[in-house]
Length: 319
Image 1 (cartoon, rainbow, N blue to C red):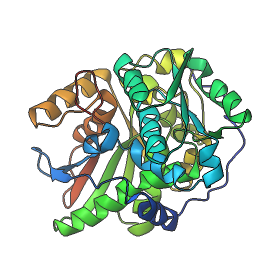
Image 2: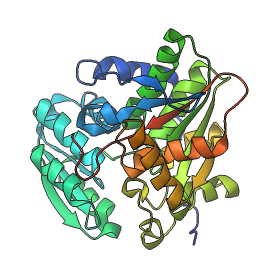
Image 3: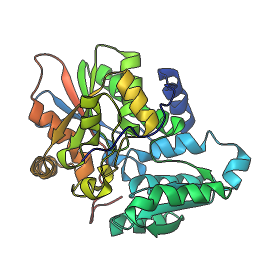
């Protein structure tokens, strides 16, 4: 199922200071999301499903675009995305006066593609295996590439979730022991890991991944980044986590920080969605994966676990 090492090793470059700088840049555009206790004692939820565009991706998109020069923004940006990053980039580009093109796989959910178009981006639909290569062609023609995860500014922007978790928990008088975040391309998990471990090394950061798209779990086990076929990762209901591998840059940070991972079944993902629904939290499957992993792992004796509900963009959902 696994392929070989994917690409040349990237340099570990993101620090907590980069995340702090991203937080300052995106502050005029992206709001803080709530950190709330769940019905399960000791488990708190970071509600990124309430972020603008319905997912954490707005953080990375604004972090990347606000780091570009005016000339780069004027020339347009391009990305590839199964949905949430594309929508976030489209909204950020519209707000900052920047043309945007989003390449989406033909497996993308229709309501997510519609949301990207509604945000003003030009959309190209290609076979799933060609999404990254087609975006690269457009970038070579003069547009600036803003990848969904394998990009320093994007990673730093996503890491602002981690800074908020620590600050909000402290305000609530809670000591965070573990932070759970889903992993697809690894931008969110690596950004949070850099922010959290760089601020408080006593906190453990753990990835959560569907068993059917368990390339990161295998990478951790083997000690090197591996790639799964799109035909395998495409089986999971968690459409935002169907990437064949974590990104090169996220992997370097996750590997250096020794971030672990817990895999969950499709049944556990759907059960977590139902549990969240009963708690009044509307999450898409990818957004429920961290909750599924945290609930399956039990609570620690002291302090709290925080699960990042990374998005709520499912069919019929608002936002």
